[in-house]
Amino acid sequence: MSKWPPVPRLRDETGSPVTTTTSTEESDMTTTQTTTQVTTPTTTPTTTLTVQLAVRATPEQVWGALTDGAVTPAYYLGFEAHYGDLSVGESYAYTAGGGDMITGEVLESQPGRRLRATFEGHWAPDVAALPTSVVTFSIVEPPMPMPGVIFLSCVHEGLPEGETARQLELGWVAILSGLKTLLETGAPMIGPPA
Image (cartoon, rainbow, N blue to C red):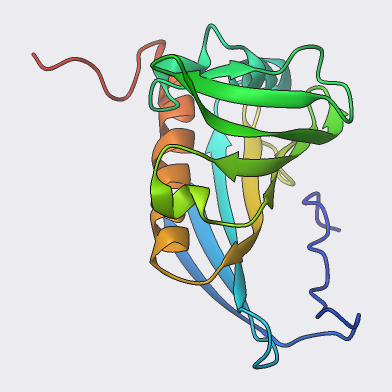
């Protein structure tokens, strides 16, 4: 039985199931999966981005890196997280340069296991034009013996298909790779030029 949370069945505005296509790329211990929802001509096709990786860390360390504003700038493109007490319904923001880069609302919070929140990006006009979407981080124990290693997944749902979604996918790969590097080495993946 898989330890990954079930992927929600995609439905159109009438509640009917829709067809999906999935592509997967794997390298090292990172998996990137893109699911495209095929919809009726009256709706905009959406995509679900999935990035999964193994991290040599405890669930508590990964949770802290995801939610601690003193840690996030080291791997999250300089963005500082402001989650408050992570209560369901509470607003959150990632800030940089004195402005909000990402805002949203906490939908689910299980410390050390799962964080689900709405996502509204503000750092560029094409991102700000996107509808509200949902990001879910899941932290699970590997299904095989891997002492000291956890699996982290990031699922970003409800994005309109297109170039901006593809750029967000690359962003998630860079951000989560940076989190992994920071936790495993104690140093940021990207630093000031030498």
